[in-house]
Amino acid sequence: MATPTVGQPKLSNDLGFGFYEPTMDGFDKNEEVFFPTGSFSERNLLLNWGVYYEFFSNARIGYNSFISVELGRMDLQNSKPAFIRSLKYRMFPLETFFRWRPKIEINFTLAPVWGRGRITVETTPSEKTDDWNELLNSFGDRDPMEEMGSSDAMINDWIGYSGMIGIRYYISSRIGLDFKAGFLNNSYDKTNWRLFKKKVTGPELKIDKLPIFSFKVIYGIK
Amino acid sequence: MKKIFLFIFFSGFIFSQESETSEYDPCSDPLLILARKDGIKAMPLKDIFKYRKLVKECERYGGEKVIQQIELRDFERDFKKSQTMASWTSTYSICVFIVMIYYFIGLAAATK
Image (cartoon, rainbow over all chains, first blue to last red):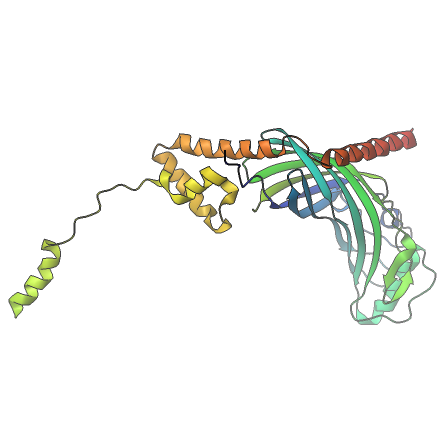
């Protein structure tokens, strides 16, 4: 009897949302610089996309990115510059799964996380250094910047890990809906931010030991 | 000369080839045969739109059962392949489960 040569998608991509609840005291409880109050979409919502490759009949490996973005205007003493804050949780998951029913799959995921935070401030060249120093002072940095580049952003990298259990419903053999619940643990350190090749202190964020939920649409490419 | 030209011109209509009488069956298209044999995902990506068009045509042609069979076979093929966890995957899943339990117990204990 001939065995089937083709099964479920070897290569799939997905797009969806994630939900979590970080505590961003560096922005929300900042007494020196006023940041616009973060809404649900800027605090709790994560945009999520990923690519997976099924290398074994019950396992797949991939890349998954959860992104949180905030846009707004800061209220500084001399200006109101636009700022963009992004937090990226880049995951490299190893997922095992089994089909509980012909259309329903249960999956188990563990993933190392490479996180990156980025804060960009759009200031005028003449006030760039003053604006950045005011912002950094509000985060608790006591070592003022003396020179700045033409386009500056403060960046922080950290590592973490995540574990999730999910359920997937296949609408067709190519398209599926996936819901996952789990946790996200990050080793964020606010003193590890970098700005123009200098170590600076960034905002107080509590992004460790967070419950996380994700909902995404899967499309099997091949 | 004029008569010769007229003859050549009309001979195309008079002695024309017989039109194709055999009907086209979308359900026996090679693409649907491939989908039935090896699964929907065995098709090249570029043929997906053609496949969808063929599915509609085949259903209109009375081949609903053929299409249902293709989809059912695809689900069954996937189901059989990953119904049970093989090799190390079950151990890995248990590890994930234990890590999750450990985390949520810790979270519950910390919030009390």
